[in-house]
Amino acid sequence: MATELGVDPTQESTRLQDVLDVDSLHALVGDTRAATVQVSFDIWGIQFTVTPLTVAATSDT
Image 1 (cartoon, rainbow, N blue to C red):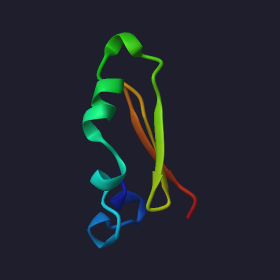
Image 2 (image 1 turned 120 degrees about the vertical axis):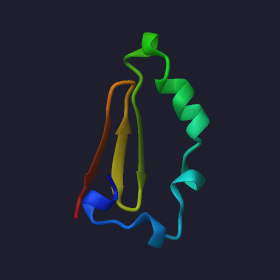
Image 3 (image 1 turned 90 degrees about the vertical axis):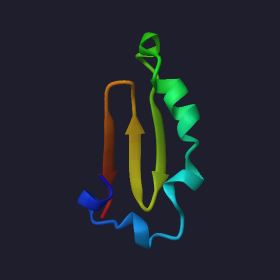
């Protein structure tokens, strides 16, 4: 998604893994009983929103 929005993650100083605890995110959104859980974070100028069913990314640029 970042690449589609014009950001090359390999050229960024902050890695996504350094910002986000993937195991915790999976625990939050991986439980289908918690369908209303939504996690949002901003990295590389892109706003990511994750739910159990979708991942969305938007950029202001």
